[in-house]
Length: 273
Image (cartoon, rainbow, N blue to C red; front, side, top):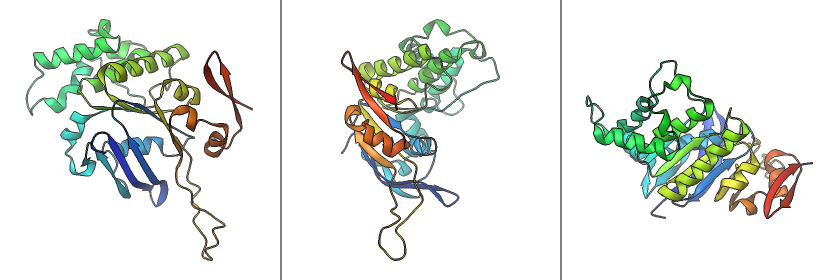
């Protein structure tokens, strides 16, 4: 595919311990793709390989027809906005100053942000519903507001792809839904491809176009006799539309727990048994 992201036979290991193996995915432009799975299954690691923060052990990531490992960091930053988990700042920068740092990939060395940069930063804040926070100290706003500001900072990069690592972490229920609705709006209105990691399967059902359901590697490979009694399973359990992927059988495979799928007023909800 010429537009979007292709992940080809990707593998990754920390200190010799395999975390990712056999990842093959094609992500279309303009969709919301959620990575879901248990702790330790490699969601954050996979996200970081997409924008070059981590170099895979094997395989490759191709973005709009170009291998990510052949792009410079500024090129990647102009293409991909990244919101990591749990951003903190101990300095009382204003919200606008924080968002303006997202313009750095577009500003030449030793130059200061100009009118265009400030305009883009303010538009990004308005898009996430945080325009009223422009002059507030970042250290004096709520957790939900901080998350919106960090998404605005990533949007100020004017990216084609937005990578969000657990954007609802540490937020109450109302703010979780608020963030996810904002993400949906960004994808629909701006045409930005969103790739995010989540913990809640029901959030993935409600707000995703596609879901990548992952499991932890079991670390086992076929034994020396070749009888396959210890199969080495790759990470991806299923990839596709949420209702096709989030089945009780697939959830059992990924999490090792039983669930039932309940339908209410046309919406589907996963409940543990």
